[in-house]
Each structure stands twice: as structure tokens, then as C-alpha cells.
Image (cartoon, rainbow, N blue to C red; front, side, top):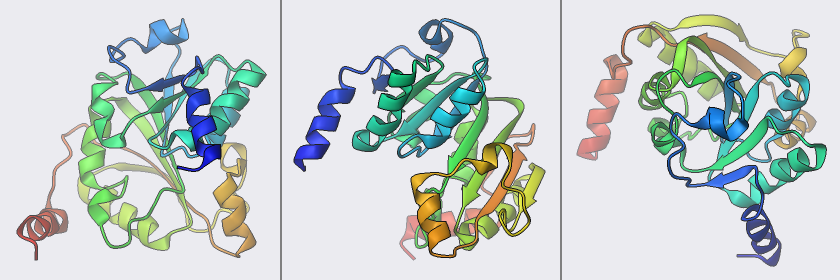
Length: 232
């Protein structure tokens, strides 16, 4: 590990707004934030730009950036502390472990910003049914999941997934900037988004809610999961 990463890992060990594999947090986030305001998660948050920017704009809401890479979390955590954003925190855990840290109806909204599209392993995509199943265990009924990506494959995959699962689509935009829709939260630009725009990439957005019925591995997802299990 590089010297710079070591410094950042040591720093977040002492940051009051960073929790690393904490115990007894499930159902207790109100005590942590000292309020009962709605909680929004930013998954695979990287440097935490969305959590910080949304926290600046919405002081009546709480935001938690989640990532496994502590050296990236450092950036957003330091900014939030410097600016006194007590409604912004960071959680260093695996996304697949989220239900260990959040209870039923504890989360009001999810943002997924430029995640790895996992072009060869779709089961690892954060909009795969196995992740939607986890989100359903935490989200309030009718809560919104937002995906912003430069990957057309992930965008198309997500549209197919939510159609198959009976989700409610709130909005989908095949080209945010081309359609002049980069307003409000969509105007927030992350480090990676600025890189993608400089390369001339198209930015996609989907906003949807999960169905009231349980998420299932049906149709092609069920078949592909079987293939993966059999090593086909």
C-alpha cells in the first residue's frame, strides 16, 4: 500500500463521521445523527461527492456514503468535517453486507453514481436482482433508487431488470446533457463524471421504485444464475 493511502487510512480511523464495520448500528442511525430525518445512501460512493453536495443542500436529511475503499472515503469525510456537515457520514463496508447495518424501512433513497458496470459479471452489478433484493430489505415503501452511469450496457441492463421485476420507473434519460436535464441533483459532477465528459461519453440516468412484491430471480436472471453456479 502506498504512503499516501496509509496516511488516509490512519486519518479516517479518527474521523467521527466514518464508521468502519461498526457494530449495533442496525436500526440505530437516528441516535448516531441525533435526529430522525430521512436517510439517503450513496452506494460505491468513491470520493463521496454526491453525499457531500446533497448534504449541503438538504440539511433536513441525512446522507451516508458507502464504499469499501477507505482511501477514497477520506476525501468526502474530510470535506464534510471541515464544513461542519453533521448530516453526512461514511460507512466502510461491503455493499453486499448492507442488511447487517440497516433495518426494514430505515432508508428513504439510494443513489448509485458511476458504479463499475461489471461487463463480464452481471451478477455484481448494483442493479442486479440480488442487490435489489437487499435494497428491498432496507428501503421504505415507494422509496427511489437512482442510477447515473456512462455505461450504456448497465443502463440497458437496468431497464430490462426493473421491467422484469415489476418496478415503477420514475424517470429515464438516455443522454442527460444532450437533453438539457443536468439540473438539481443531476447537476452534481463527480471526479469520474468530469473525466467521462472530457472523453465525450454519454451520461445516462434512471430513477425507479421497487415493487411491493418480493424481488425474484426470474426469467433470464434465473437461467444465468444457474449457468454461473454450474460453471457454464
